[in-house]
View 1 (cartoon, rainbow, N blue to C red):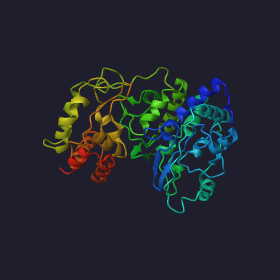
View 2 (cartoon, rainbow, N blue to C red):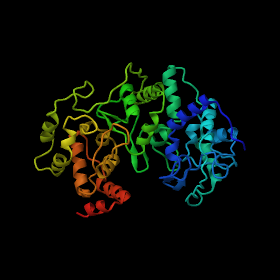
View 3 (cartoon, helix red, strand yellow):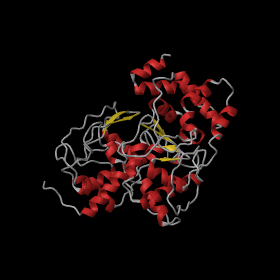
Length: 417
């Protein structure tokens, strides 16, 4: 086939859609070429490998017509008529408009072709038989495109289209049933993704300070917010990709999600929000620099093991009042501490927050090599007490599993202490 020619404006819009859909993250293997596939996606049913979506004719989508591409996005069926596994979230992409499908196709078909075979999925019988996915689609696939809700304004509907469609936020932030489908009656109530917890972004959110459209917009644009914390795990590349989006699209996403969290339409903020450290002199998070240390002394009993660890390892940064990247959020504000799952806090304590290339964001050393499982558990319990929250269940087993996933030699030493 001759290389197709596309309008540059269409390709640019396709690039924005690919960024919003986080396509490069899922379809790029570690140390692999962008969009060349091969990344393993762990599911409760086995491992599914992301496919090559470069325009290579043998191993990618170089021979795919636009109609074939649209069918995959709308119906979850590939060029050869085989059902695709919903690890490729076509149950969200089906909501995309014809124009946006064409733009995304134009962008992908103008990428550099990469010859890269996709590894075979490792799925047990009968899940390895793609025909059964036809039944899954009958149960759970509601074909699009998106239909605007006349009870809301244009900005809200734009946000709904982006969140529910190409952004597929519910794929991570919604719990799934035994068949791997999103539980529709629990939309955005929190889910699991790649060893991390995607926190609730509906009315059940456990955030200490309620999210609004302004704080959500700042978080999505910057990857952190002084009253909520930092994006890490699978959310980090999501917000990294969102930096390529027009500001109005990020605003629309924030307005829609804020409405889901509060149960009503939230008007967008008139000015951009500026994330701040919780101790800074800013109306979003002002508090006396000494307030944190006073709170520590009053909440935990003297000699508490978690308090001692906090004082030695955490308080220097988290109560310093220094701005990002060298200052940390007041931890009772962090969703990692107040949220419904301890998974993200455990991951961050063990692995730290490495510095991001070319970005201004919080950094933190890892403590997996110096804290034992019991010490991490004591610290987590103390932080929950600081936030006025009850203890999490199964802390020790979760910490052990997370450390095993890291599988670092220093971690193994610390775990045995």
